[in-house]
Each structure stands twice: as structure tokens, then as C-alpha cells.
Length: 120
Image (tube, rainbow, N blue to C red; front, side):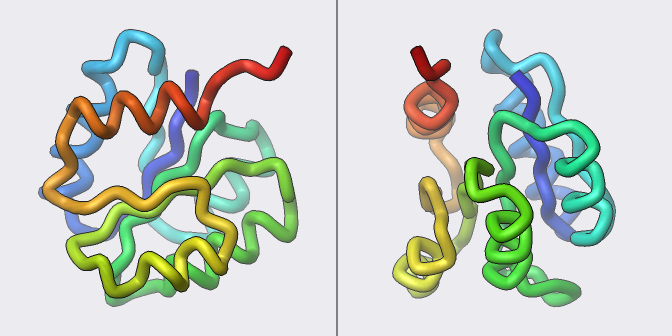
């Protein structure tokens, strides 16, 4: 399974990437530097899940998710945030899930399992 993770905060990105790679079903966690890079990488090789951290100052994660979902309505986008305040907006933007920081590894793995089940 491949995950794309976009987070401008190096420390939180590294922590979340480490948690993701502890999940045996995930073989790749790519961390593009810019929102446009994320969309380009996704369109070139779709990921099983796209994680976008809300609260970034250099880009609007909700707008990015809408852009990605317009390009591929089948994309699975989940948000990570320190605040519950944006949950409603995230789901309105098409979020598949909304995880609160600090992200509990058990909850993260349950979300990944639920969101990335292979369709039969």
C-alpha cells in the first residue's frame, strides 16, 4: 500500500511517517514538498490514501483535497489536525476520515484498514 503525506511541519511529518511505516501493509510513504507536487505525484501514480495535515500556513489543505477529488473522485483523502474545528469543513470537502493529533497508532491503523480495504 502506498500513502502520500503532505505536512509542512517536519517534526509532525516525521512522526506520522514513522507510525505509518510501522504498519506492515504500507510499503511506501511519499512526502511531497508542495501541494502541486502531491497532485502531480498522485495523478502519475495514484496512492491508496492521501493524508493532508490541516493547519499548514503555506497551503490550504481543504482546497487541495477538493482539487485532488475533482481530478479523481475515487481518491481517498484523510486529514490530520490538532483541532476539531475543521472536521465539518473537511468532510464537506470530501474527507474519508479526520484524525486528531497526537495521532494514536491504533486509531491510525484502524483508519488505514477501513479506508484501504480492497474492493471485491
